Length: 304
Image (cartoon, rainbow, N blue to C red; front, side):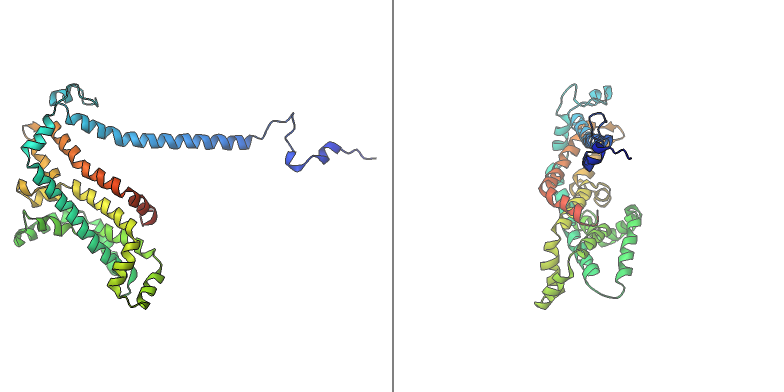
């Protein structure tokens, strides 16, 4: 004679362990708790990153409207104890402000456009064409990334001096009109495009330049926009190269000319921060206009 357990054998498989006297499974609850904590941690990281960016910017704006005495009394305070427009007036009256803004636009904008042109043609040749020594040339270009710009500063300055290009736009722009980083990023982007696009254009009679201009560039807009923002911001904020090449104030850029507010007698912090805040405005506008392309470019090019 055998004794069986009818309730246990008749219970559905999915209901096992869910009786009233048994505790609910703890693993799903732990997973839900971990998922909730992960969301909270993600938001905390985003808020911390936003504060790390916003607080220094707010401090810079606050210093632009403070006196030096107010700044030295409490440097960590964000809002001025005594508001003043001395910094803004100094930037607008003691410097040839309009000429400096024009110089900065010509230097950053002109150099970036030429850089996009030269880098995209080089990247197209390395990514889509076939010729001997292609990989060696690419490795040599990458090797230049390890050479600091300051190492070549004196030789390039001497060449510009013998050419008579000091204190000129061509002296500012031409030596900076190409970048190994730009060639690398664009080459990675061009290599991701299907080869069938080139072959279809070749069948229709297109030559190499037509393929580059009408097929490759329109399909690489996110990568070009990303490179434009990176290089334009770097050149706009660069003060070393314009300071070395341009000895005349009327040929300098705004970041380079701001060094005039720092001397042996002291530093005019309000004027420096006011000039820096004014200088950042075009960069913010450019980023807002190209933000969609920038995010798409970061997700689809060699930056990922």
